[in-house]
Image (cartoon, rainbow over all chains, first blue to last red; front, side, top):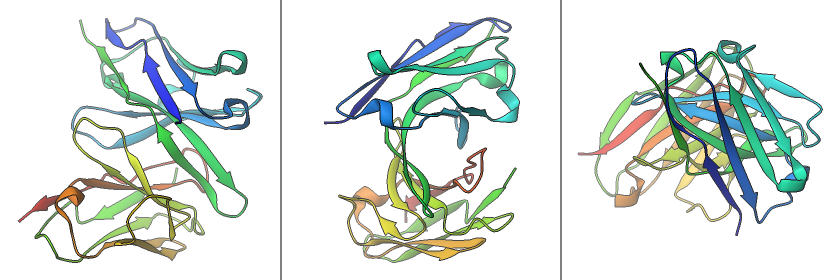
Length: 122
Length: 107
């Protein structure tokens, strides 16, 4: 069974830092693009960042560029999101998700982890 | 960035009904459109990928159609477990934007 388990969320003050982790099992982790998606309380889903299977390419939504860094350790089957200079508006449940890709059909996200809550508040 | 607009934002229906949710992209996205279902406190679940391909294990009462900027998700013969929030997502170009969600409630 494919499983993604996030950890590392919690309460942090504005301007602080936090590192999220996502442990994968049951899939060939090193062959998949991986993404982080977040959801603020009562709001819709927002894609945050993704990373190439070998970690050689990364992409971010503009609102986190320069503050967040996505990375991975294929030997540990783990995905990370290092977050700095956190703002109130970064408060959300953060999900990791596996990207599946077919040429000319795009990417789709499946499966997802259960999410980890990040609360930015003083 | 590509904007994704869903309609309606909320919808009331009864068990057994057929409902349609629409998603419109701000530019053409070919068929790079996915649909997810989300229940309170749970992670999103993939229903449809590439506009019309049914994800393995998803009941055939769910179907997707469309291309370019206009897409629809149709659920026939609504079941009690279908009452949830549905979101579309484009993966034509990063950032991979989502629609704002459609909350399907029991009438």
